[in-house]
Image (cartoon, rainbow, N blue to C red; front, side):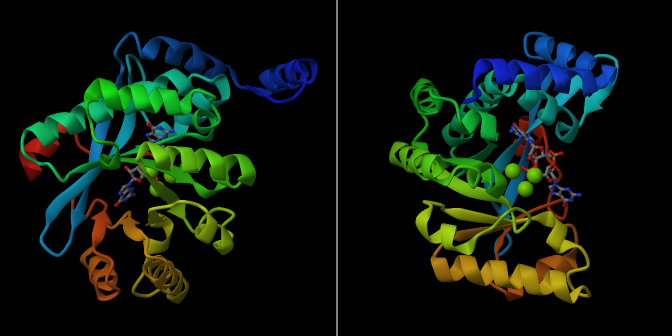
Length: 275
Ligand code: C2E
Ligand code: MG
Ligand code: MG
Ligand code: MG
């Protein structure tokens, strides 16, 4: 919901519409029906403790299986979902189903496992975000601290006053907050002190050539040290190779998410592989 006057908003919206490609408009229309047509699916990417190769949690990653186009990347349809507002019902669906799935894993005996869910800025700004999360937690019977909400820096630093209050309210519910793609946004390190953040996720772009690229090595080491010194948990994303794993382990960064261990999997495949 825009805070601007509605007249301004409509004008803005209309001029933006005319710039949009037919392709995008068709995708948006198809996305409207994707939920009820059961074309959306959640994949889960394991987060592994590299010291014992045990699964600690999984990140829920949305997939759209379009009847004609096949699998569409979230990088292509999440922006459309955000622009149209569809991300709100879709995001609620992801959250509900990820919590249901985690509850199943808990009931199967994997009682320490967590689930991470990406929240778009648009959802974060919704007035009923807290009620929505609260009702999903009570519907699924999931203890809140097993739910990790992933936000990006750019999302949360847009409006710091509003953000810090909302994050504190989320924390009061008992859920954990992770800062996703850390290092790529408008990071102001001072914010880390004031914002109730539990986890930093090092962006996967810094993993590239980490043993040869001195800049990436320095940035990754610094982010890890920062998290350690602030008492935050740290997750390395996009870990694909043994060399990257060795580098991270040497810095005492042990929670690893990446193709080296596993691509995102359907829940059943993850259960099969790790439990
Ligand atoms: P993200 O939250 O940073 O998720 C991590 C992305 O990195 C995922 O891409 C994952 O498949 C990919 N990845 C993980 N390990 C590796 C690796 O070793 N190598 C490479 N090359 N890639 C790796 P995916 O699933 O395509 O998702 C892309 C982005 O879409 C996500 O980035 C997130 O920002 C967004 N997204 C996905 N699902 C949702 C959702 O339910 N809600 C919202 N708001 N955004 C979502
Ligand atoms: Mg994420
Ligand atoms: Mg990320
Ligand atoms: Mg991302």
